[in-house]
Length: 112
View 1 (cartoon, one colour):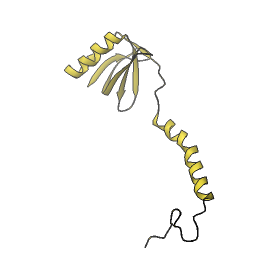
View 2 (view 1 turned 180 degrees about the horizontal axis):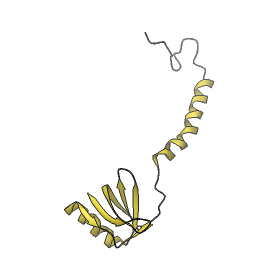
View 3 (view 1 turned 60 degrees about the vertical axis):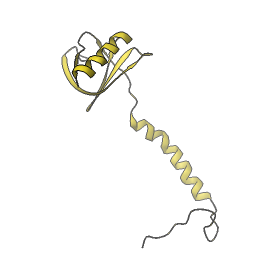
View 4 (view 1 turned 90 degrees about the vertical axis):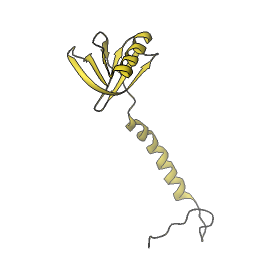
């Protein structure tokens, strides 16, 4: 699907879109592309019309809507939060007493 829009510098741009979704709290239509995600400020009715046009025609002219800066959730943030959990898990594993034969826990062995 393709979207025609005006970028942050008010220049005409076209983007290949793989996903379009509306966030009512922020009043923006989020458009996800291969290289970047953008957001356009609009109301719910206009967003529904734009998504329907994308679905039916494979393209939409959204030049009338204002480009806006939105902090999209990055997948990297997810991993940053988990780093601490992973460190805690490793510390707990080190502190565990597995017994002499390993029946009460994990047995580590060399690959043959």
